[in-house]
Image 1 (cartoon, rainbow, N blue to C red):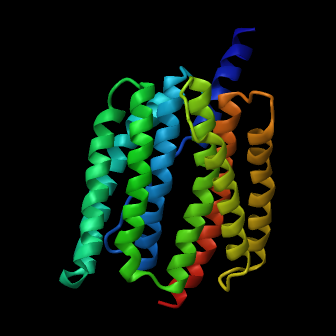
Image 2: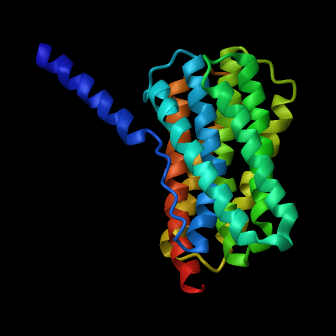
Length: 266
């Protein structure tokens, strides 16, 4: 029977590794399309970091959130500085407002990093959540002078990717016992934004048959979050976390298709 227990443990560990999020490296010599996409990833993975932080606060061991969080903070911090420096150089002196937006984004990350390195608390989770939302806005502002129609579409995939994670974060915070005064309005707004973004992406010229199928798959997956939001049943944190990760991987496949097409037009 011991070998069966060892096999089960090994399978659980493998599952955790397969679903653990990784902070992709930054290549300053890559194309603008690639690095614009990485900046979008900064926004989305801030939400993955916050999700892991809350899972640690909930004393969950599913997919090793404590280990993922510890690794992600170091890797994300390194990439945040690289992204900041790359776009600062690219924007030049004529785009001082955009450069200032990247400065503010980095400051918000630094303040959040300090809290992320401490044992999780409900108060700090709300501060980090607010900081990251502001940071996302600043990262979007920073790249605005460089955005082409194709890059705007790539940015929109990031928004599509973040919405299920944002719903999951709010749901997990409530499970943790955190009071969210505007929970109903916030989730309803996220759902509305998701469908608006999905409609725009479904009609864009970067699509092919595969990306359209993936967009439909993402739409079907999102039904889970809508059902979860309206249900009286309490969903377990592990299932919510995995569903958000599944959506992330679907949208990354779509973004890969868009990037390949956009790079041909550079």
